[in-house]
Structure formats: structure tokens, C-alpha cells
Length: 106
Image 1 (tube, rainbow, N blue to C red):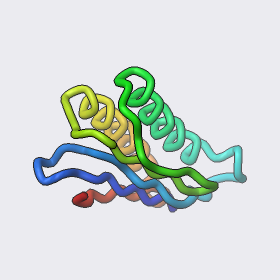
Image 2 (image 1 turned 45 degrees about the vertical axis):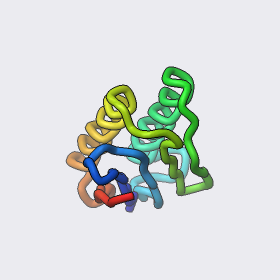
Image 3 (image 1 turned 30 degrees about the vertical axis):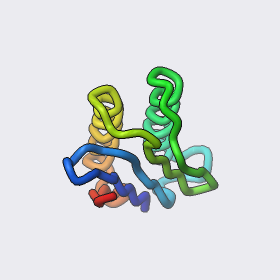
């Protein structure tokens, strides 16, 4: 199962996420659920850094990705992060036994 923790600040603004695990739907490199979650996360992280010029703290390793804002959340970061969360939620609704999303405070 892929476990996604979406981190929010005290105002409810998203400031990062942690993704751990594998969907287990298919072999590594063939799993469409893992691919969908990965591309949503990588694209969001890249967009924040390249389009908004905001660095992220975090790390990636096989089966794990996490990233957090190094600056305060703003309207632009929220648009990107909320779009990512919509994508995660859509995938989780189609594959509820493969993806779990939780909200945490940070």
C-alpha cells in the first residue's frame, strides 16, 4: 500500500508531503498506481522549484519520497499542492486498497 501523509500548517495550508510504500498492483516499473502517484509528486515538486523558484527540503529513495517548503506557503504553492492532492485523491478513490491519504500538522 502507498501511504501519503499531506502536511498542513496551523492555518490549514499544505506545506509538504511524505509518500511511502508500493501499491503492489504489478511488478516494479509496471505498476500504474505507483506511476500515477510518483508523477504527481515529482511534477509538483519540480513545478514549485522551477516555476516558483522555491527550494524544497526532502529526500527520495526507492519506495519513499518526501518534500517540504523552505518558505511560507502562499497562493501559488497552494494551487500546485492542492492540484497534487486532487490527483492523489482521484487515484485513491479508484484504488482504495492501494492508496491511503492522511493529513498531518507540521
